[in-house]
Amino acid sequence: MSQYTTPVSTMFEMQRTALEGSHQAMKQGVTLQKSAGRMALSGLKTSESLQRQGVEATRTATEQYLDAVEPAMPDETVATLRETTDEGFSQLTEVHAETFDQFLHGFEQGLDDYDEFSAEYLDALDEGFDQLAASHEELQERTVEVIEETESRNEEYVEEFQDQLEGQMDRIEAFQDRLEDQSERQLEQAEEFQDQLESQVEEFQDQLESQAEAFEDQVSA
Image 1 (cartoon, rainbow, N blue to C red):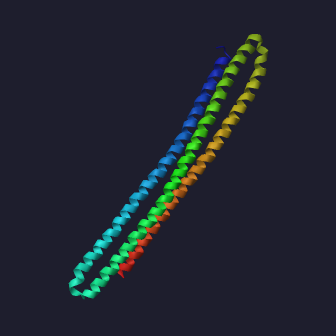
Image 2: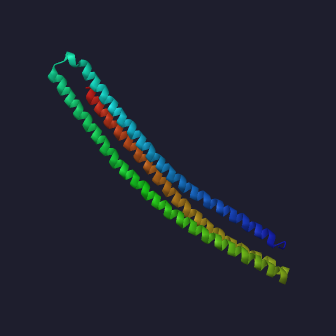
Image 3: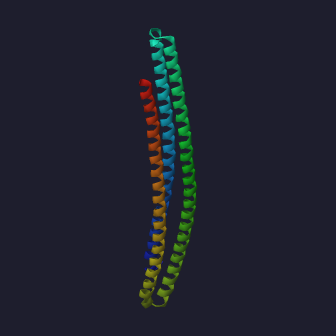
């Protein structure tokens, strides 16, 4: 390589390394978003299990209380209390299960939709990067060839070629900027989707807790 082609080739290599780093960072961002959604789903199932155990514990405690006071109360009163308690807890358990199943179905559907979206996004990202890398490599080859030809003909053409090279590099950078802007918009959409999932989880957990608290208040009364 000549004194002109060596720095140009180095510049292209540095740009290619930066592009690859940006490409990998975007893919990792999408992967992290997918992992976060699955972790939220796992946490939701754990929370539902703990709440169900809490309901069962309250039911057991209520039955033990009725067993303790049964000798001092009329049989009909205890029987009525047991029937009311059993019906109430059965209803709460059923509502709790139905509510969770409905929410879980919607949540999983949302995750599946995001998986499909992210797969399409990653395919488009890989395709765009491959095109950019191919164009970048082709530009490097043409640039080196022209520099060598220009240098062999006459040094006075070097400055003119450098102006042309800068124009070509500007077009490459503009294309890269458009690709990055598109990726940023898609990542923002992914983050908004993740926020919606988290909000739905919080609302669902609040709903289940409210149902359990309302029933406990009813039993206590």
